[in-house]
Length: 185
Image (tube, rainbow, N blue to C red; front, side, top):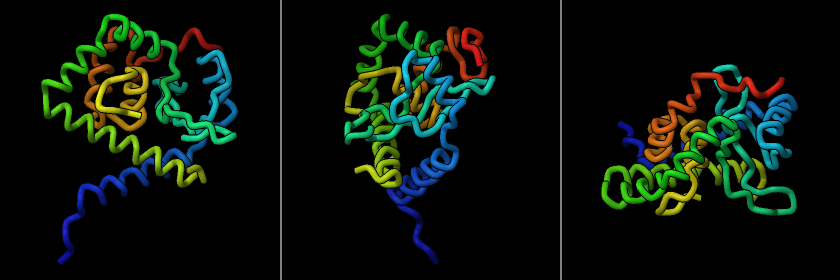
């Protein structure tokens, strides 16, 4: 009889599978060119497309933990879709981060889930760093763009604040509805 797997072992296994998925499907020149147009600059440290629009264009990318020269890049799940960035910027301008921070303070269940999302994010970042030969999220909400990117990359149910951001922007952005018309292929 085998002992049940611990939560740490399960997380390690899940993170390894997640890293495998992205490292086996690296970004190609076409994806990099689209993200460059989305950002208006070359996407530094881009490893893979983490989530795609219904039309196939990138919504969020997975980036290296370290840039060339050993410069840390803090955002592993990076939101690139201009439509998603705009929708989340509207939430930030409305003061939604304050409301989400209050939620973390007032709701221990959500706070615990958010800490779990943080642990997964850190473990994923570490796994990428190890696999790429390279050497976040605190107790408060800092960047709704990064949290939505994490939800898009890792799936709903991982980050409760990222899930709430996705729900809050559905009138302006949905990963299942293409609004990429402004980008040329």
